[in-house]
Image 1 (cartoon, helix red, strand yellow):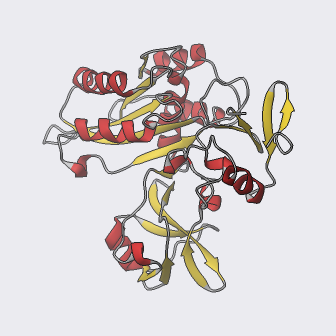
Image 2: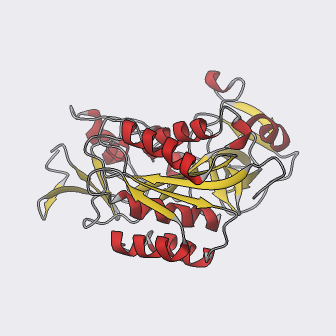
Length: 68
Length: 251
């Protein structure tokens, strides 16, 4: 996970490439900390995806993982 | 608006009520709406979700969105606040910073200033002081109920964005016959009848006519555009399908 998320100013961040959530899905599939956020806060149709996780924090064009 | 029945219309907006794994702000908003509408569902139709600015300096939990609804009631402002605040306090997460804003739609105020605040809160960091100052200037109720009370910013911004009428997604999804089994086909007219939306809108802004066939599957959701609840669809090789979450994200 840390190999894909980058540590920036103390925050583990995953830069997103538009609406291509392939990496986000792959990472969430292997993550033991995934918690699905409210359906209304999800942005990927595949539920198990980092961008749908309650432990992610949205940034502009990126998410921060608060679980790592 | 005041009617002979004594019903009056209000906008209620709440923000920053949740934490990881707790009940969402949208669900709490729906519950407050039900409590205020005395089980007359027609008095409160839907909750809108408004996305605000995401920035490291803003202490939101994960997404920074506010939830707003309109309700028609005979209750006074004091009665509305008593019910809404009690529920907000009891249902908000311990670590949350909840705020609530309440606007009497009959009350004349500088709506443009309120809308401008909402639009600014989507692109820049706003402060509690700015929110309170504007609420006082406009005569709008704004209050905080725990933690840092940071939620007052989003609560006021959400009011402005709902008033603006071109922002946000409708909370929840529509249930349609046959949808659980897979794809269903309805005309636009049938979909409007079954869901109660105002219209069917393409992702390029085109309003579809009643006879146009739709192919619906998965989660069928609506957005708020032109003050109308709009079922969002996109053209998939000549077939109109309900928007994917990736498309809804932009609303």
